[in-house]
Length: 342
Image (cartoon, rainbow, N blue to C red):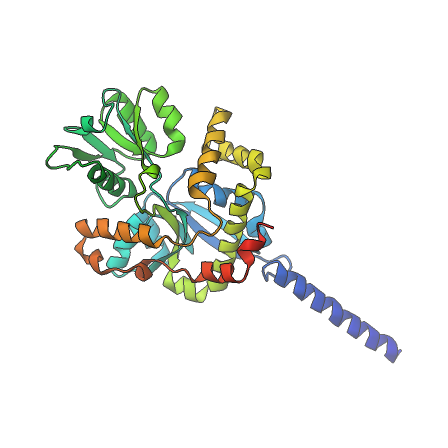
């Protein structure tokens, strides 16, 4: 009888050990338990593909995460929600987080989603060239430090235009649907829109004046941000979030998953024409989704410099003040990222 008891205890010990090893490999969650994570989403466009794919394909669940997403109406609200503890992370823009850091907020980017200027500069039906922007009203999302407004200021300068000298008036024209309606109706002379809307605005009579992604301007448009407090106290959880998004990147970049990814894009962006999803997918793998998305130092420094023209407090900020590479470095050096592509 005693021999049977010893055998059972030993057997139970082996089972528990094996279970612990399996759970550790799956992200450390206990049976039936997951870690809740709340993520803010400050924009809705194709550059959220990795988030959508990670949700749809179960990569967050694989990491033991229960993800809730919250739509945020702007970067300022996103920063406030992170600082207030309402959000663990937020897909935000350096144009929003850098001014907050300059004001003392402990916000930091841990993974970019767009290390380029992701816009087309489009003109109204009567504006067909860059020089024709002189004397025009040009629309950004708002008059504050929005990503679209900063991009417009940089691009005008790139093409040798000066708003004061050339009588170009920057106006608040709302989000992309409102800006597209304004530019195609002629209410404004030009604006910037995400590339996935090119076909739509051209069919409505607007003219593409420039693809800003091809101008080789160092830029970081948006990324995944958190607080330094969360980076310290919830580091293991944030690492699992990044792991899931990196696995989604690998999924998107795998040609075998092209059709499924396009299906996800068509559903999330409510494209009526399936060809729109096909074009957007091509843009994703060419410009946005990368194997090892480290925060882009040159791009962030450019954004800091532009913000400092408007907000002098930002002039003393360094890359390390607004971005943290440590999670990406750990996953890279450990071989985790490379293993996703074998």
